[in-house]
Amino acid sequence: MPNIALPHHTTENMKNWFDYFNSQYQYIRGDFNLRLGGVLTNSIERAGNVSSGATDLVDYIFEKNQLKNNGDILTFSFKGTYAANGNNKQLEIEFGSQTIFDTTALAINDGAWILDVEVIRTSASTQDIFVKAFYNDLAKTAYIAGTQSDNITIKLTATGVATDDIELKSYIFNFNPID
Image (tube, rainbow, N blue to C red; front, side, top):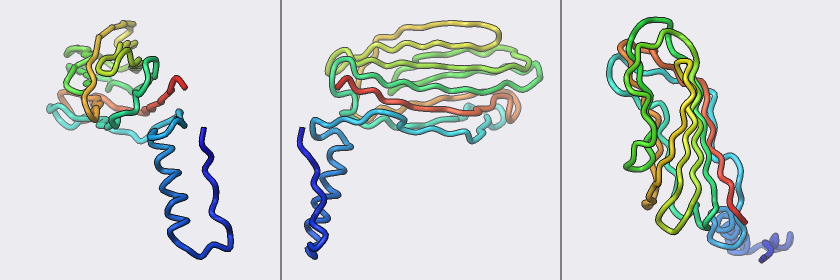
């Protein structure tokens, strides 16, 4: 694996520093054999649905070429609560052009929900997607054979009747490369 060398401290040529930072960027982006995993993004900022329309609570772009090797894994988790009323509430997760999970509209009165997703690359254009969902005193799982596109847009959409029928409390995206 190549090393990234710091420019000599007496170097006054800015090109050497540019080359250094450009090399750092390329390594982090996966253009070389060094692949970094870990938390891609996370938030504990509250977000709620707005009136009776569908509201994107999370709209994240997972950039192309990150699931580079078979076995690379992307995981993400969404956690939130329902308002204490009898309104219909619905959560939906989209992965690219696919809906990978949908609670359907349910009259849920109070409580919490957790949606955990694991995406495992199985070939250059496909992946296995597993979803664990805990909501409305239910535990469900789902399996989807997914397809990859360039950049993958991942959305969590909430639909309620009144504003803040559904609140997102936190989310986290993790990337675990195989090597």
